[in-house]
Image 1 (spheres, rainbow, N blue to C red):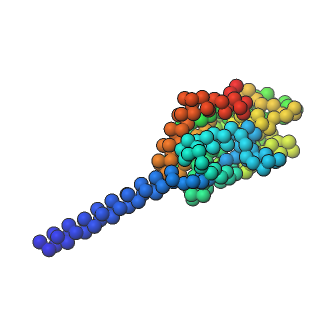
Image 2: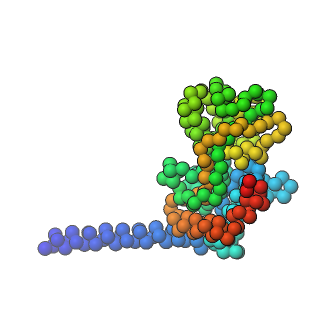
Image 3: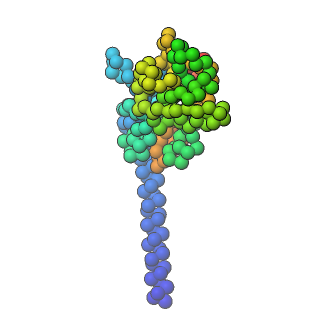
Length: 261
């Protein structure tokens, strides 16, 4: 009898621990919604999406406006939004460590990434494209056979192009960089033969000596990324995007930044 009571006591204690831990986890997940200031990761080198204005020293662009609007709809009009520049390589780790609450930085939604982060529904869809010098003589994707492609570290571009190259029977070489301006500079200096990333990003780096090839690959759906532990925030952010699509706010922001064509 005593042994049975002891076992029952141990089981009851274990159950209470599980209940307490579960409750704490939910509390932590909900607590973020009470914050008065939130930190959002954004790009600072992508024209029309996230760019540091050298005159005002403020971030501006489509994703900046989208992130601020979502923040207001989720946290209230008085929420303070603190923006921090991220790259394709740093945005994930900063989110995981809690240094950022959300990321709005041309973050493509993939099944693999969904295993690590919460993603909202897409707020913008693009495609991987290719930019080359007009003087290069390259006219299409197959013309890049044996050439060096400049891509961003930790982006999905390399994987998309490698798959397309395998299907086309051509060979590509890749050189990875930490920022888009670095890739553009490498293209200008001849260290790479092509600059590849999403088409809307490339359009901000075009000039009279450069051109986009007609080929495009792998639809890139951008979503707001949120840490796995913050499920409630992810749900609220997703609801906000649904509202913005329904009331026309998202379309207006696309038009504002010339992304509605």
